[in-house]
Length: 225
Image (cartoon, rainbow, N blue to C red; front, side, top):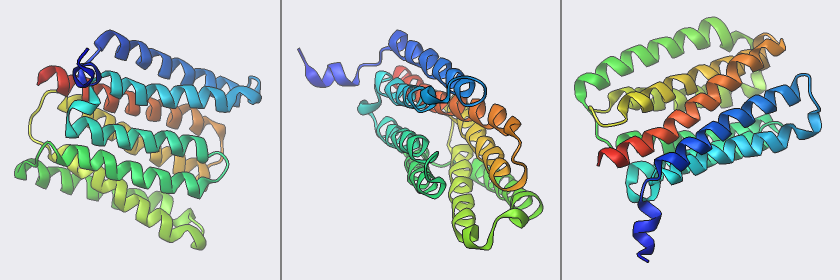
């Protein structure tokens, strides 16, 4: 058996199966945290997050730089999911590293100058409005630097998601990047602005959908290649 060929060969059916597992486990995690037995919340979180990493690997991630970098980013997302409930800032640092991986994956596809200009203008404008008129005024002084830094990192990720030229899987990847950004906005709203648990029913579905879309974009690029 050719081990390398076995590792890099996309397996669509298996990838779609782990996608369903990830989203189902995310739903069970929400139920466990908000109404069900909380003892199972972290177990469901681990299953949901590990499943989107496995989805990328089953998409043939190790066969391209796009796939390797995206999988690295998703792996650190998984770490953030596991660390964040116990230590918000530790989870935040894991997600900073994750965004470097995701951004690197987008950069591996190249940059279209026209797309870059449009994406940068839109992304920066939205981030400035969100931070200065929504979230920023509520962030404690001791956490301002970390939140500003994270805002810069995720905005850069969004910029380069939109800056890529046309490639198979681009729409899936761009949708994943946009949903990831939105999920973080609502997570920050939950922590700093409105502590109502309704935020969980917005940010978690957005987040897990974004991660499975990013993972499935790996499968799309590999099948396209």
